[in-house]
Image (cartoon, rainbow, N blue to C red; front, side, top):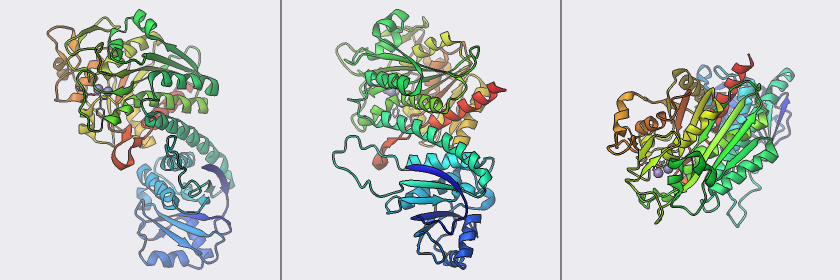
Length: 499
Ligand code: BES
Ligand code: MN
Ligand code: ZN
């Protein structure tokens, strides 16, 4: 989809469709009122039929509205005008794209960015519109041998602003939205890619490709180097696989030289069978998504590189496959992590924390201002929060608040979970410093407690994205989350360090 920004009135635009917002109780947005005037009250008459109630996400398509040059007019509900928040706005934006998806409307003008949204400016509204449009038209058809219905749907979306003076702010929003959409779509592609293609080596190649296209620094540490570093925990997970493990280190250096970096650590299990503690067969294909934490780091790097964000950011991706094999790690094995702490493996399916703990120790060498890890870590988090919120854990309350706010602003939300010491004893082991599981009760919390033992030297937060990184069922596919949250968080950090 191509985007552009223009200013001006709606009635004379010769396009395939004009998108106009209407509020609950038949109130017209400014652009809708202009069209209504030019159409001699036609829009008001239609609203009186009650066929559209103005609820967020509702829509009604009109053809050949009198006095209007465009072929179609799409009315989109925005809810009550004074309640127009991030969620209602995004619902309306999504509804407008969906309503036009199967039609022959290639050139569309949308006026949705003109309406006021609580606490957000025009640039935010345009960015959201762009991101939602790209998100809801995303397809993964790499492996389809027959072409789909590619001619239909929106080819060009013109975002219309009221005043000429608003064009610059809207252009800035467009740039932000496109950069975010590009990172989200990259993360989705990596997640959706079949696990026989998306191996640790493939992820490393994708990171290296960003060096050429986006000017980052990337280093890939191989097995021998990981052995030298003493990453006994990470390497234990990889033992059952023929795919070699990789530790990918990305650096975006656009802040002052003296500025400490923000470090993002992403779980990159390219397939999680559970290992010797084998998972049940049902839906096991979805464990190709167990590298979505890694994908979100790569996606976020793509976005911030495109934005030239003035901040120092390091990305660390431990990536390998968790397979059963004669050489695989056993339940009962004791591992020595890079930190020196020993771990009794009680379940080889709790492998994410085993690769993350060594990556988190490795993060120390960057003297970070903060570390955020992102992982599809526990099924228990899905039970706790469902598919709407990511689980957020932190050893520093201000950092947690920052991430929660970033999630709200980007509508990629997280929920703050406890990390109390009360839970730590569930990790006690008779044979090592700790076990790698803490029992069924509070499973996402004990997983976070495990990680917290490796993050004592810096401010740290953990995002459990097991419920949010992909969708199951008929709409099966990666979501690109939490790239929007992470991008917003980094933008805020950059704004703060600029002052
Ligand atoms: N990758 C899984 C977590 C997962 C499971 C995410 C299902 C999304 C859906 C992780 O490696 C895992 O297997 N965790 C175990 C931990 C348990 C053995 C303590 C789990 O959640 O069952
Ligand atoms: Mn597992
Ligand atoms: Zn896993």
